[in-house]
Image (cartoon, rainbow, N blue to C red):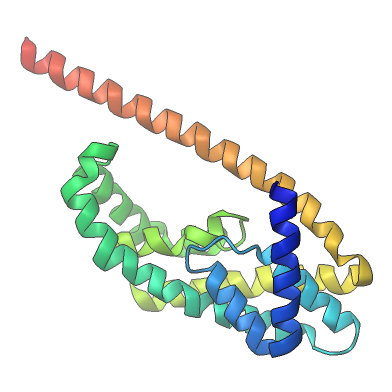
Amino acid sequence: MIEHILTILAGWIVAVISSLGYGGIVLLMGIESACIPLPSEIIMPFSGYLVFKGEMTLWGIALAGAAGCVAGSIPAYYLGMYGGRPLVEKYGKWVLISHHDLHLADRAFEKYGEAIIFIGRLLPAVRTFIAFPAGLARMPMGRFVAYTFAGSLIWCGALGWLGMKLGEHWTRLKVYFHQFHHVIAAAVVIFVVWYVRRHLKAVRRHHRFHSE
């Protein structure tokens, strides 16, 4: 089922880039960075294949991809800031997100925001959604855009280079990155389990303290 969906997506992505060129890369990578899981592992390697064919340049596709990432990330950032944050502040307790957790996130982005965004842009799956928590934590926009562009330029350039080197066999990359997505998903599940257990223990300690 997933393989069938990826095949359909790949066909659509190829058609968009073939029709719109660099503009198609900007559009698709913008969608991918707006919390919509459109695989950059197909977008950029195919673009690299077009570099292999002499129809594009490696720097051109890397810059187009990074520009698209910035463009798509900004709406997701503001959605986190103006939409997500009020909801978390009001209803977060129902999904085990306390004001203390929100404060910790603010502190983390204040101290390590550059590293969080830069590294997040180099990780499959994570890169698609990283703009939302940055907005939630109100990371300064200038720093957010700068490190989004820097990390995305490396990511897009690397995938484009691999696609260029593989040439007609660029689709082989889909298999490896699909497997890596499973690793990311497993790490997320482990984190969620740890997070829920931590909160439940805190709630039990709170009740025990007040009952004594």
